[in-house]
Length: 389
Image (cartoon, rainbow, N blue to C red; front, side, top):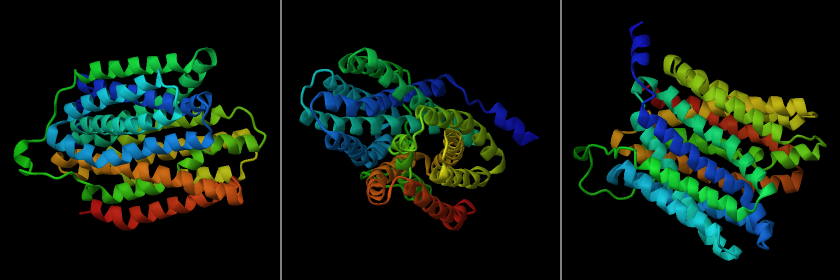
């Protein structure tokens, strides 16, 4: 009974926590707007599908290169400085999109955008981790993750709807204005910094934080399968002669939104195993349903299972990263965790593209569960042992 009272006496929804969620929401909305409209913008500039794929890869590459440096700077220079630096840097490429007429210049801007977004997203996650009371960690990270899911639902729809009636450059002008709002909100965040007495006199940039190794390994394995949902689902559903492709993402985002805070509370009370293992089983079930799905209702059930699974697993893994890491290494730990997603998503897109070309789209959903099985084995035989120490 005392534990129950302690949980709810520990205040989660502070002004600063709400502010950092708002910053994260806007940053991801801008990113998803650009992600979904950029291939179409490239076509308007005279580019082809190869160029569109290259810009996506360069964005991911920029983020991956920056992650370890960002993590180290968050821990050594303070959270607010890096958040504001990343926000200012994000403004540069988005403003550039408003005026460029060359796809070659666009490639450089996408790298800068990847660098900037990695700084902003790692900073917001680390600041949120600092703000969340320890007894409500899983729940707090769940609520923080809701902003990512909401952005996924809002950003693509907003961007695609806007360009039906207006032009790309005015859309990117609005996106640049949203970044200015992010900067303004960032000024209201306190500059949190680990106790300098805890820091070594000289610190080299940390490539990865070893305490984040096993949660990040699981995230990497899950991210390897993400492309079969993010990239190939529209083509796969259309190949089945089924309309209303967008409903898949609506159902997925809705379940993601509903699941994250709920499973966070369950993990706080009953432990992470109660949400991580069922979550990975839901993801596996989703892929197997997609392999055989003959109709829209089955696709939507698969979307629901995928949303339940991802909404259960990812916040819990992220929370374990925060729990395992020393306070003065949270930035590096979060950077390690997010870099696992960068690598997995990039490799997965290439790997599944080859499988789809050689064997057909349906086999993506037959083979994807194998990586989730590997992730379950890593959890059972590696991560759970670390948790038991």
